[in-house]
Length: 240
Image (cartoon, rainbow, N blue to C red; front, side, top):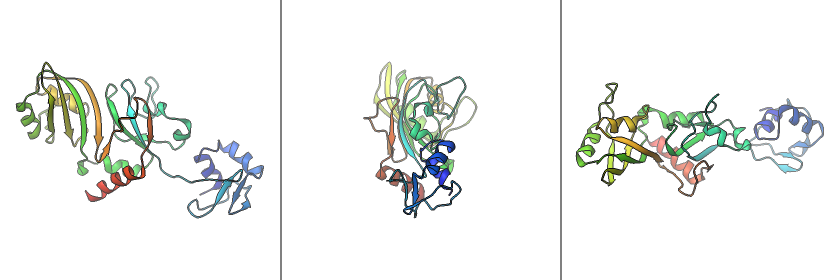
């Protein structure tokens, strides 16, 4: 990898700013000053410093966000605010993207990364990655609904879903439930409840595979995955 590309990717400025750092002699590779931006280095083996501070190379970034309602799961949009707009500049430089999508009015767990391989594994229909949601339903959810979800439901377009696990937390005019599905069809949870003549009035994703939403994350905030969380996520995909 070229030294100028690495420094730009690690947040040391634009290519022009990095070029000035190099020209000023502020960058060393293995204790030798490097001024040519085209110099190729191995970020995993070479020791790189800027202003005598060692550069810790990071190729991938893995972020857990507690997505708020009102923003869309996209990297950019000319009209709507996106989840990437909620990131700090030092994280945006890694060009992370949302893994899958949460509807605009849905809250909760959203993973953002620039690791395309992991994202593909998590989204692959063959992996059957479970996603669990908490929801408030207008209408009394019954054991009959639980049985229907367990068998799969016919949606408005004729598609029959894979079985879903429905758990009733509170039943009444407005019911609290948890639903686990392994697909990600457009508005799937809402359409599944519409199929049993009920309406989702609040929806929040609380888990994706082994990854649980950190309840200490306020809406609209995020953090990097811990090493343990990342290891669990990767192990779960390798076992499938």
